[in-house]
Image (cartoon, rainbow, N blue to C red):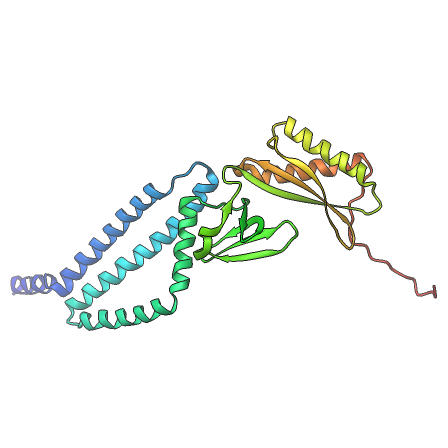
Length: 273
């Protein structure tokens, strides 16, 4: 009696609904792990830590897409084991996908363009680029759009599908502009000399590259004169160098009694002025 029961259990277990489902789940799990490891090994490479970080983000995206695709295929196979008409289901999904593809083809092109930008290292945050006579610094690179900020403050958002028309003028190193707000009452020649000395000393110390320079007055704002520095440095050290340069400027301003403007509140005691 017990032998017959055991045989019946084995027969049930080895049906395609049970045994087939287990095999599909195991195979899908192994396949996901193997492909994800291969993607990481192939794509997470770069000349700098900055580039590696960008590629890591793309690898995570690819892993998510591949994992989802394998899981969907596994579900369809399992449903077929249980008698579901997966051909009709696939046909329905194909029609929906076609409609969505036609409706979102520009979005898909932006998405592919964003991936290509990061993988091919065509642009990096901090690069100075030109797009249709608009020159500025790349402030962010997304999967759909890239943002460029002009030196005067305007921001242009470009769809990644148009990225082939961008001219990159600072691919090998970080090139950025640092604006310094200074009080109006300060002698501009004195301020210029102090900032020139800061840049010169930073170059001598090997903090920034020798083509860095003080450029002059960039704007006359409502509460300050805005001076601008052209900084060239190692891409990986950009933010550390920015902090160091700002600290040097603050020390130099304090030593030369140069004021940095800040918001002030005027309070009256209620008496008639």
